[in-house]
Image (cartoon, rainbow, N blue to C red; front, side):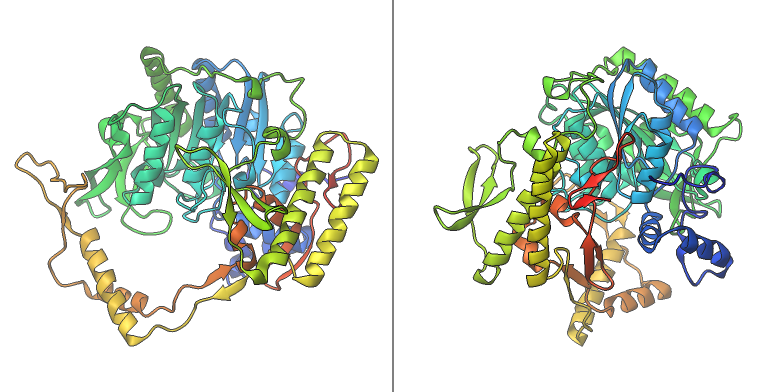
Length: 582
């Protein structure tokens, strides 16, 4: 039986007293007592999990959550299955209407347990969102506050090449999993809309291909100050999943940014990139945009709350009312087209959405690897655009053949064990499968080591020639970044042959502090990379993330122990993992 979290330690959403993770920093003496108490309250594993999850979690004011739910209701939500990716403690689930069948996804074990205890009426899936495997269009709607991070996670279906950072991956995958006509309401960092780099623009372009932007609200930077102890500039984005593909050459303006003059802390006007949507809809900014100190650096776009408004949530609610009214006018209300595979029957919605074997009923998923005994070769299931899916040979080095076969055996046993549990198979069948998995795992570790082991590469000192080359590259990059857009006679940017603004590099001498920074950066050792070479050929297999989750791996010591791998936190019975009861 799981102990309930101490109520005096849960006065508002969030595990940590500071959003920047200072409580976990041994060099911050002002948190010594709290840090010591946390170490007493948490196991070593839970403490490490909490420390790792602080930097990309932002918790949401319940008043803002209520305004979002009310807007969704006014837009036409009448019930159905609703996804909250990265649910944290479950604020959105707790405030959901009775007609919503809530499914929360949370990677941090402790936070998932808290969400489950606070929201026993909802399903909480203890897994990384990148491993969530459900059919497209499974949810009538998606709502939540996605985690923010510049890092990317590997999702074999929706982010196979690490193209999108964490928050954009969450939004794009949520759009795929939401039924056509359904709304996706997500709070995300403003860089989702404002990023000028190729990756940011490509992310918005894919979002535009998947959905209409119903509207957006740029939130004051102080929105999360009270509940999370941090100032961060965020946007509330509202999408409607497209029923028909985006027409060719119909890219909406909000995919791009514009240079907008804003006032900095010194009262000077300075140009900064702002998404075209907010440039055209300043009334959708719940305050006043300015240039000030952001979460990580000076010279960032921030939003000061409008002091004439009674409160931030009330101001946001008023803007949402306008967006809903506009959606009704434009035919963009919430009207999901739910397919049979995503039927919204609450009674039929059992704990734990179907695993891969049930979802695809024997149809291979793109990227799946198998050993073909007849041809004596590895094969990968390739579903190339415009071609019939087929099994294609996959070259594996001879030195890796035996281990790769063993990994595939472990993968198949893991899927079988999970499938036996979610399908209600006989106890004897479940026990036999778990025993087989235990034997196979023990044999693998004895022969090769932990599944999640890695080798560290890089970190060497650069040669003088490499440093000089990097200095040239970094200086060129700085001059472009701080250059001037070339304008025509009407003051509009002149575009190159690829449709991108032409920028004249900064022509003057580098400021001394920038020259020093570039010299230091150029001399930095090569990047350290952590590579799992033994799994390289299986990196696109959709069940690899699940396989890697069957052990709890300590990156510092490169040791592992068997994990329970709990697909769902349940209330009515004890939790059984792939290796047995826990």
